[in-house]
Amino acid sequence: KSDFYVELKIDGLAIELVYKNGILETGSTRGDGLSGEDITQNLKTVESIPLSLSGKNLPKELVVRGEVFMGKREFEKLNKELKKKNQKIYANPRNFAAGSVRQLNPKITASRKLNSFAYALVTDLGQKTHEEEHVMLKDFGFSTNPHNKLVKNLKEIQKFRDYWEKNREKLDYEID
Figure 1 (tube, rainbow, N blue to C red):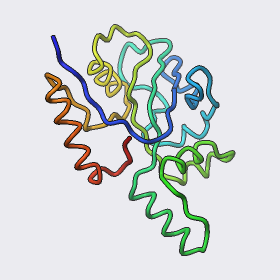
Figure 2 (spheres, rainbow, N blue to C red):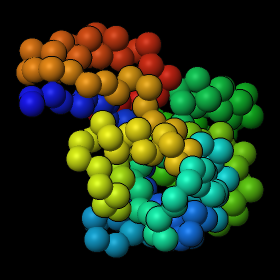
Figure 3 (spheres, rainbow, N blue to C red):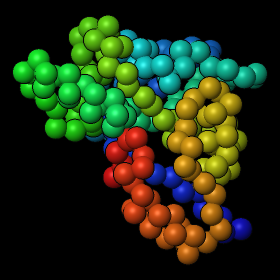
Figure 4 (spheres, rainbow, N blue to C red):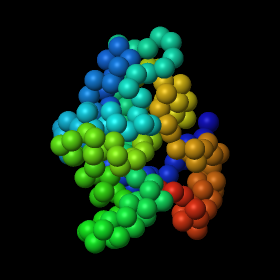
């Protein structure tokens, strides 16, 4: 079978979430891919990251990877407010989101209206395809990108890519 599951690459901060017995225990940056920075308290303030998993038959441990980002409209609103106050404006939503989850005070992070999409289920729960991973992630209560889709061949992959290259401004978040 030659199906492909395609998704947009969000321009945000890569994170890893570890759930023990269905409860968020640790949230970290991906760092160098092996170790990252513990930002659990700040990630707990991002509404789209579940503090506890939904569903039945939850695994003892679940590891999920995703992206934290700030929507373009929220970012523009923030920069307008900063400009009115004659304060420094931010260059892009990605750097702002990355700085926001590294704040010492989680209340500051909470005030910044960040968002998150999960994109990988690291724990092996028997998933065979990337599409299955995304179905499972949604069942556990994670937000996933609604533009992800199953396509049949390389031509459809190219069509997906070309569409989003032309229409990326319609998205409320940055993509790579």
